[in-house]
Length: 196
Image (tube, rainbow, N blue to C red; front, top):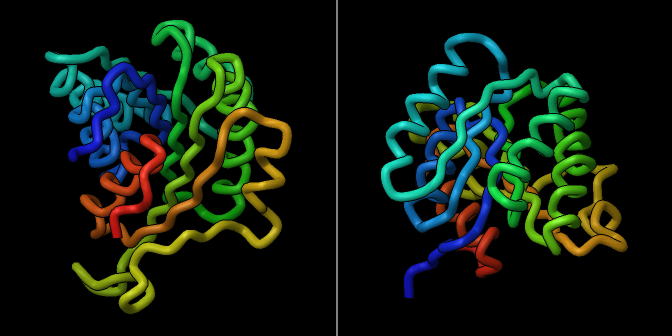
């Protein structure tokens, strides 16, 4: 049976990236209402999520925004506004290709503010997706283990979610593994075992 996310409300931060577009498209195509949010506030990123939202909005609610994801106030306000507009959140997905230091800061903001909205909505999923360049086009990052559940050594999902009514999943992919990343994010939101 195919996974469906009908009625789910999902915020995707980093939707302007190639892997973010694939994840946003997959989540919307299985029935979720989505907020496609660019993690950069430049015109190119803003136009990318607007085009994506227009292409997906015929059959479901799709919101497009662009923010500076390193600005704590911008993240806090955006997450709250999106949650209000969608009527709550069932999942928050952070897709990042940033340098490690910025990535950890963005992860913390996603956990802090996304987790708060997930709690207000009765629980849900926080999914962190890291994208990194493949060594050659089509080649996995680390040999055959192209999808790994990784996180910084000082971040433990059980510590992040202790006392919370939401769960966290950390995934890392080569930039070339778009469909695999998208399928695994959909499965994580649905609470299904991973696709591979």
